Image (tube, rainbow, N blue to C red; front, side, top):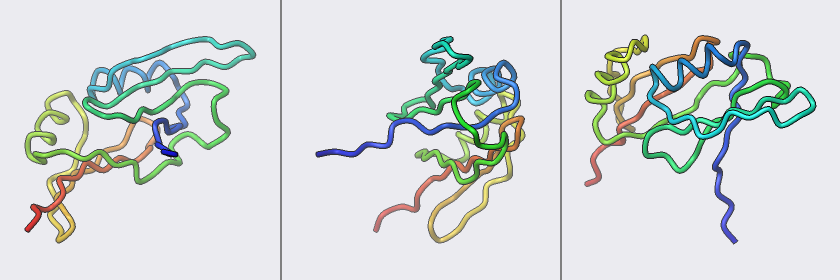
Length: 123
């Protein structure tokens, strides 16, 4: 039996603003935007090349907007990833290098925190 994590809820205060950020600036694909009834709007977005997605919307979570930290994307080229994000208008940190990988960091308009990691080369 596989237990795959494929969807993470990200709490936002303004769905349209967040949707624009994730699609236009972070480069995510918009998979679904549906009013599923009962005051619930479900928006599913997927990072390029990822098997996992995020969900934003109204009525999908009781978490406080901006309260999620530690969401992590993994890339093979941190400099190229940083350049792509910055080129799309994302306020992204400089590259930070650690023994466990090279990272850049950014936040969505609500302050939900993301890390982008290039793992260290395997020996």
